[in-house]
Image (cartoon, rainbow, N blue to C red; front, top):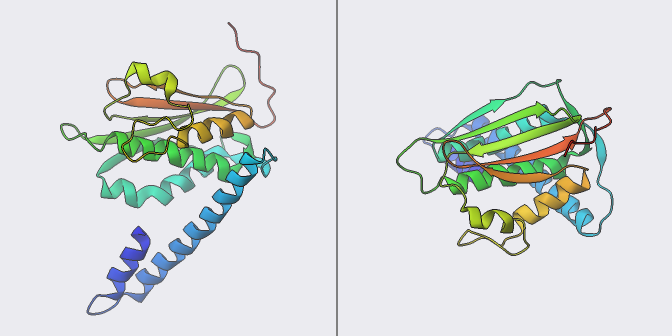
Length: 212
């Protein structure tokens, strides 16, 4: 919708900027294809059929999502920090499903900062390797945070803290990550907000058993 509105503005000028309008339409087509892939991936998840597993550069996959959401970040005045180094970490999985998880976590962060007016809005995305042979992705916002009593309920189907939420996003995200052999969990952010972390097995690395 944002790209469609931008395209109309470019065409509505006294001297229409056809090149910018064409770029906006191209982005609409890309978004439409991505939506089709997402729906297909969610259908496969619901049917418990295997996704399209392939070796993925997790840094590049994240960068594509950030590019897709840059208009929303700019609109909401959000400062994005992303520690990405393409080529430094690869995982096995369904790229569309994993990108959908990241989109959901980022949009949750945007929603959490909607009521933040006394400090700048910021989201930080980072990727790191763990000692157990996994890749960990973290998404941290500096929003209002999550009540400790809600932490354990966040992944329950139909449970939501949003006025217009359906309570399915985080439940689906956890199902996707667990189907990839990883895990997803929230933590209180410091000094503000919330950080969501998820892990995925690194491609070509046999995960070590975590110590207890």
